[in-house]
Length: 345
Image 1 (cartoon, helix red, strand yellow):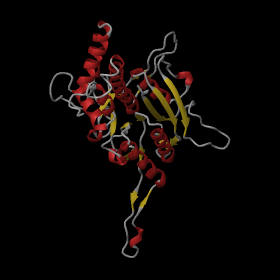
Image 2 (spheres, helix red, strand yellow):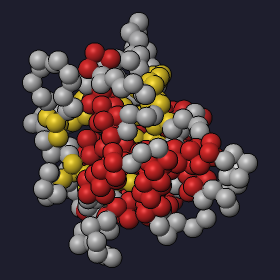
Image 3 (cartoon, one colour):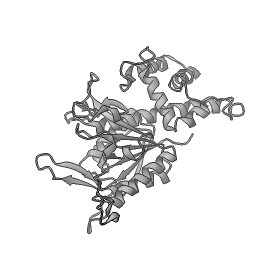
Image 4 (cartoon, helix red, strand yellow):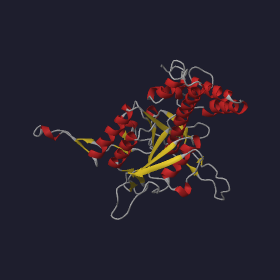
């Protein structure tokens, strides 16, 4: 079984605050250009944002190879009363291109870039004056191409909603570059109440916890628990959820093949072979997530954008804990079959 790879495109990762798991492998590189004599390596974080995202992904699925790609970020003081984080489009584009070259399974992007493109009206005198202008038009266009290429390569992508009710998804990258091939995540609290500052819900794929989400407690740590807010946290949790679904399907496939290599070499004998492969397709992962939304019993959930993950996965965990030997593979196979219901071969 090929190792599942998740690319985290963010501001880097600080090892000092990184939660280490036995099965996790981490590597990375930087798309943040040198500033004079100053390097910006991937294993350093600008403000800890990428480190928090990595920890959230791994607390859901520690059985991955995490590819950390650092991008150029900064602070905008356009609104003096509320400084905001900025991402350089060309740096983000190079990061997505690198993730494609590494053939990752999932790309997690807990950030947004407003296109900032204005349409100039042509005048009767100069018909050639009609065009587009932006702060970094070339970088914006490069990022759009990279996102579309990732979609063509069936890389599952998750990105954040803007934590600004005044903005719409069609105005922001990476979502607007391939809106039918990106899961756009908004935040909610522990009672599934949506963050009132999250923008118009029509462009949000799902709402996951993103209000007062505590970091995992480290054994023997004397530090107080840190809580995080925002759709960026919800996005990292979504990346972890999508990757654990992929991991379960691949693991069952591997176990089936290992039991009877000759009989299970084809997808006809081993149905998990095509499920593990086809879950890399966006529409199929969308079906799997929809089946989670339905897991509370009704055919059409009251809110299809809420995912009652605990109910389904806790039930499977209880079954796995009571199972022995090959029964564990069968119980996990039951979960994969449920998640993949309605996915065509």
